[in-house]
Amino acid sequence: MPYYVYILKYADGSYYTVSTDDFSKRIWKHQEGVLPGSYTSSRRPVEMVWSEEVATYHEALTHERQIKGWSRVKKEALIRGDFEGIHEIVKAERKRREVKKRKNNK
Image 1: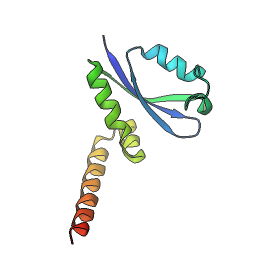
Image 2: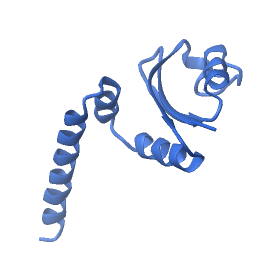
Image 3: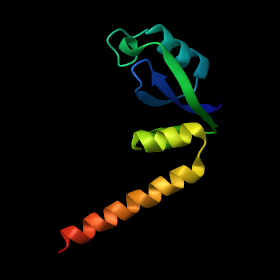
């Protein structure tokens, strides 16, 4: 059974990353606001802007958690399919961490 990781963009411009094993049903739930009071229901309509099919639940959950930890700029590079941009963002993040680490060790 395939699993899916996807990013939704809400009407307010925010992004939501999630995974599922029933893509069609889950997207329908987001669009319909099935769970009143949820993050999704007050920000509709939603637009699916990126998705990936993976083989296992573990892989889907790992990708979901990884992407949720990313900055907005990094998510937008992924959405555009700009893998070089993601690489550049990662390099810049590492450089900032190194500078901060050096400052803290002085």
